[in-house]
Image: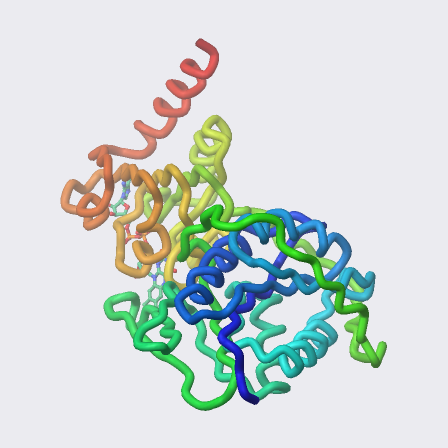
Length: 329
Ligand SMILES: Cc1cc2nc3c(=O)[nH]c(=O)nc-3n(C[C@H](O)[C@H](O)[C@H](O)COP(=O)(O)OP(=O)(O)OC[C@H]3O[C@@H](n4cnc5c(N)ncnc54)[C@H](O)[C@@H]3O)c2cc1C
């Protein structure tokens, strides 16, 4: 497959509203395409796909390939992979950026097998160096970074962690190109027989502006109520360290860190969290980090913007009250 220098983005959206990570990737696609002399485009599936054109374009992709078929509205990984693979075979983009989210990972895996793409996962940066597109991913608990590229005349798929890149308004409306349905075989459609909503799976950590996170210092599941109260007053959500998740105090979708989510809120309040490297890699790009910890020697104070040495059971309720008071004033 003789490639172009075009860079594509696989768009994830909620009924026409692109997820933040899609905007992050659109900006990166534009940057890479500009560096290589290609163009930036995106692909979106399902009802509302065309409505993403305004934002996806504003954040960098000049063209948006869409199929709005209803068949793409449920968990339709195999048909999406099929249609995407056909489109890649026809248009020959050099790189396709995918968000490292459950659905996109599945689509990327299947589509890569169909087009023979090289796949790089868990990227936190993507850059052009000496004409090659280089993906950077953390390894060994975030203590080192590994850079990789794909050699040969095959498409390069890069799966990028949400919140690793900066979305920027660098374009205008994307031109929408309809690619029709092209699902040739309905038997490929997964039949959704039941949907079970896992407790906490609605925690929109990746999109949150404020996160109040708790660790082992929270001491038990019932005490997370203190953090929830503070998060509520601040209009935020609750996150957690792996120690708290492993203890069964709060569910996995709340976990921040290397094996949890990467977050980038404006404000991250870490309560009873020591600041281990595996936690740090998931939250270090927060704009302002506040740490509350009773041990003044905790590593978290080395990278917090504001540190409070004290007991969370004393400080968090006072903080909540103070926020409440100021909001009423
Ligand atoms: C491969 C691998 C992947 C990992 N992935 C992740 C990950 O994704 N996310 C993650 O978080 N961890 C991850 N870990 C685990 C990580 O190494 C740490 O063990 C974990 O982050 C520790 O959680 P913690 O800070 O809550 O607990 P601890 O390290 O036990 O810290 C608890 C803190 O609470 C303080 N404290 C106790 N009581 C109070 C109180 N009343 N008031 C104030 N402070 C108090 C203590 O001083 C201490 O600093 C991973 C580890 C490995 C090996």
